Figure (tube, rainbow, N blue to C red):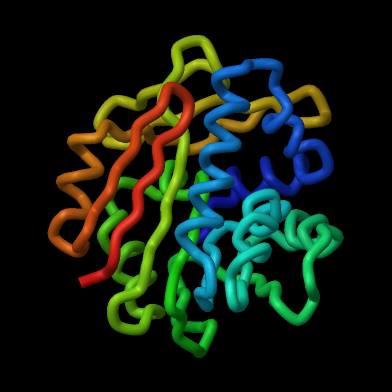
Length: 218
């Protein structure tokens, strides 16, 4: 499944995307540090597949402790930036991959990481995406997911389309235009309902700016 608008946004913003991690907001910065620490704690010694690795900001955290990371993304421009990060090249492999066709990776993993991707998955195919991710994983793997909480007046106006379950936001492009990008937000209750049937040891943490969850696949 391709989302050309979303890929166009990340393709154009690849060079300056990481500015979002330097916003002068003490609460946001503290939550980012907590998320980085959580990734390192969760994935130590694990053979990890990362979905939507983007420019590698969170890949750095996983690679610092994991046995190995296979970092995937559908956008080549963002992965080219990720490759410049300070990784041990023996510990990280980069693959252009469709998040909805993960079987094409051709191997299995002991854990999974995906930061700020679930919000871009259409609600109608959420369970299909999760099922495809789980098919990549060996028995009992750890899965770590994180994404944005809805903060009023931050990150653009939330747009809802009549008759659709998904929501969207207008995000700026470097040429001065905007792109309407799918962006869904989840409550703790929604995340619990979504993952409880497929997870054991489910842990959910909701912050002001970010949520994160960790579980072991049933």
